[in-house]
Amino acid sequence: MKKSKREKLKAAGWAVGSAQEFLGLSKADAALIEMKLSLSRSLRERRQRRGVSQVELAKRLHSSQSRVAKMEACDPSVSMDLLVSSLLVLGAKPTDLSRTIRT
Amino acid sequence: MKKSKREKLKAAGWAVGSAQEFLGLSKADAALIEMKLSLSRSLRERRQRRGVSQVELAKRLHSSQSRVAKMEACDPSVSMDLLVSSLLVLGAKPTDLSRTIRT
DNA sequence: TGACATTATGTCATATCTGACATATAGTAG
DNA sequence: CTACTATATGTCAGATATGACATAATGTCA
Image 1 (cartoon, chains in turn purple, cyan, orange, brown):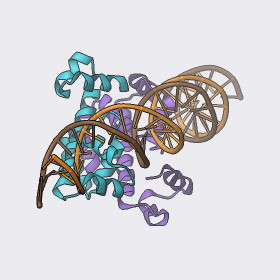
Image 2 (spheres, rainbow over the protein chains, first blue to last red):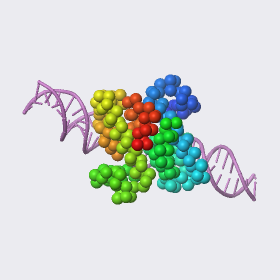
Image 3 (cartoon, each protein chain N blue to C red):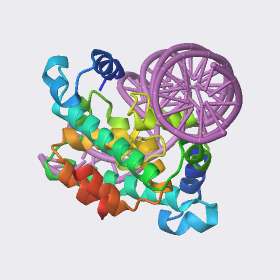
Image 4 (cartoon, rainbow over the protein chains, first blue to last red):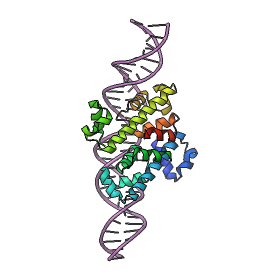
């Protein structure tokens, strides 16, 4: 998918599920975004449940607070690789990721 | 994880599972690579099962044959996003991806 | 053998992602 | 109110991923 499309999507403030037709997203594009949304929600949940701040998590990831915030906001600039490896660092097991994706 | 580490890994010709200690990969890094390996295997399986050539798949993805080959070889230059969206284009459902990752 | 389809590997310009930084916006306690 | 902590948002230089291309292997069939 073109990056520009996702930017547009966010700019328009549409809920992802409902934007598919409007923006001409393919099923695959939409499904990918849904998956990333699930992962980002899961990330925030995990982090908060453990009482870890974005700053602390950023340190563990050798990243920055702003990037963590973007991850949790599912910013278009965030890759699935980053989401997944962050979850793994927070102790998520493949089983957990599997469940997150399916949901 | 540093990209250089994965390059090194491939260069050394190690099976990923056994390379973790040797190259100082973190558990998270290793798990991420394992997941990508699973996805790439799944991609090749799906493609072949459907009798689709790499060239044909490349067209559907608006990509190139060489990139498809790299995906299936799990080349370090291939992102999880690309693997996943390719699988989705090949008709994989979130459930399928979920199963692939878990395994 | 040759001709052809398929897959693999290497390179490169361009596009996208990333960490870092600045700064803004909550929220909370004193 | 101020001071402090946490989170959000914008930007940018440098790092990484991508498609495209060339070319090399590998098959396959006649």
